[in-house]
Image (cartoon, rainbow, N blue to C red; front, side, top):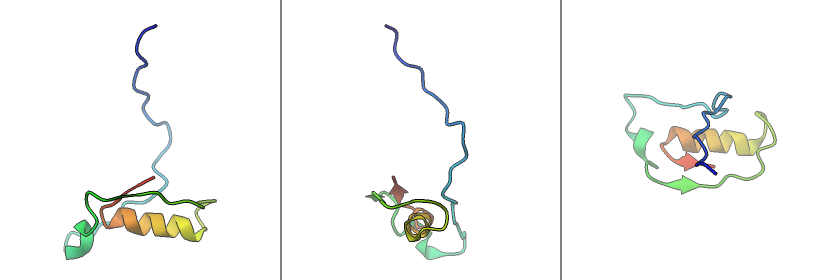
Length: 61
């Protein structure tokens, strides 16, 4: 068996990258990781939390 090829994601990233170049808090959580559970759709509270955490530089899953 050959090694699996890297599969490029065929969908867009559902979490928007919120970034303000003039803001000092943009990197507040850079290098941090978090697991967000309960993301049912774009209207769930967990989705909003994940989007904000990503905006502050965190890597969320």
